[in-house]
Length: 80
Image (cartoon, rainbow, N blue to C red; front, side, top):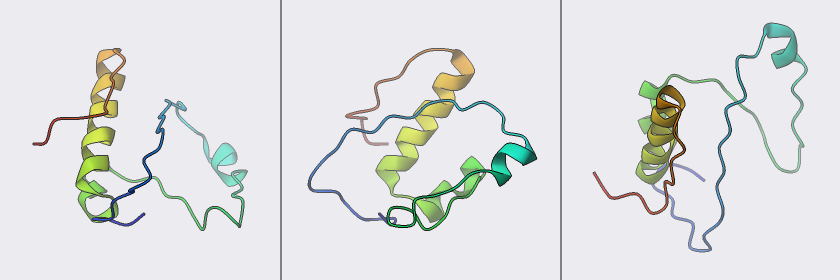
């Protein structure tokens, strides 16, 4: 999905902390060609150009949970 898109079918979204990946591990990442065309590691400041406002809030909540050590249920998140 692209920024501004809405998924009318809903879905279950799970986000896990994968830890810190070294260069060798990153080099071994492979993607299923019929599902994904690429991946990137981005700074949270770039989220506005890469995902929808709803997913920005979800990712921000997940990053906060990572720093606080608490689990967060992000659906539904109240609007900002």
